[in-house]
Length: 132
Image (tube, rainbow, N blue to C red; front, side, top):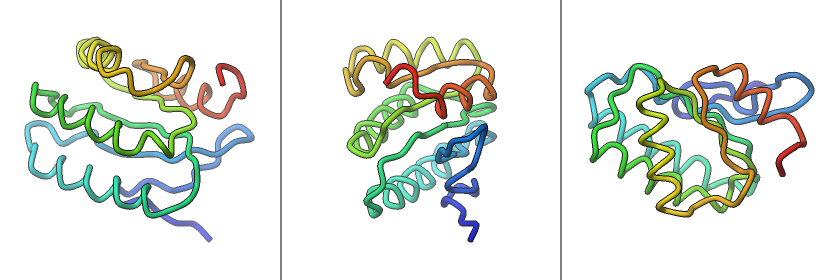
């Protein structure tokens, strides 16, 4: 049976012999209230299930202001006990900010985070067994 996450992504999503949980935080542009509401829904969805997950977060076309970036880092920290691997896809500028914030927060272990502009590369990395 196909199920969807609160953000509308198929979960689990089958890709190249593996599965991951997709989260669509893209296309929120400047609507931070809607983005934060969706983050809370996804957080509850993930934390209320016992599964460990490989997660892809799509952030294209969402403006990551300082408050939005802080909220995103807090969100990742909250769901980190359920994360096997996390891939984040966005534009280069946002990825640079995310990289600095994630490094400062020290949330995930070595090899658990992939940041990139190509969502397909992120998906492939998630389902691979390397970097675990």
